[in-house]
Length: 175
Ligand SMILES: Nc1ncnc2c1ncn2[C@@H]1O[C@H](COP(=O)(O)OP(=O)(O)OP(=O)(O)O)[C@@H](O)[C@H]1O
Ligand SMILES: [Mg+2]
Image (cartoon, rainbow, N blue to C red):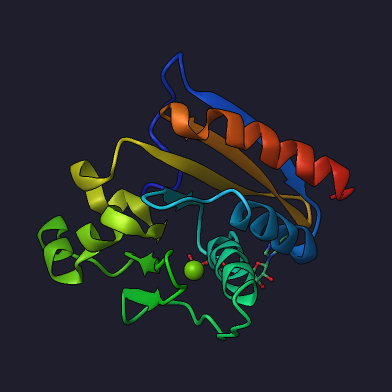
């Protein structure tokens, strides 16, 4: 049984909700988050099949690469489980763990390397079980009407200010 919602939040966790009316709004959120990420960040993307996790990850990655004059298609890592992108000082790791059968297999994927210097974006983070880093940004995507509601929860202080900034910037963009 897959878990599509993050574990219930502790009292000190900060959550911000952002309505994404269409796929273009998801792209905008990806662009905003790309401007806020830093080395060693972990973003866990929660939500059911088709919720928009890959769309959001793709927008983050393509914005980071575009800043370096690069373009990649950013396919879903459904079968490879992990795709990496060399974005100079900020390597990006994009994982889709839906097909991970055991957290022991994580070692082979080498995700610890991402935790050292890069940005790690994880679809189906429930598959990591206890290995999921405690310090992270949780983003839950839920279908609401034709669009999606994104719930951003800062796990640890490092994301608290940044989710406020993300919300402000989305408001400014009129998204
Ligand atoms: N805010 C939005 N409103 C409506 N549709 C959206 C929104 N964001 C993304 N979508 C659409 O949702 C569809 C599924 O997206 P995506 O493949 O990113 O889902 P996923 O969560 O990665 O699914 P999976 O669990 O199968 O990997 C895409 O067609 C995408 O365009
Ligand atoms: Mg996906």
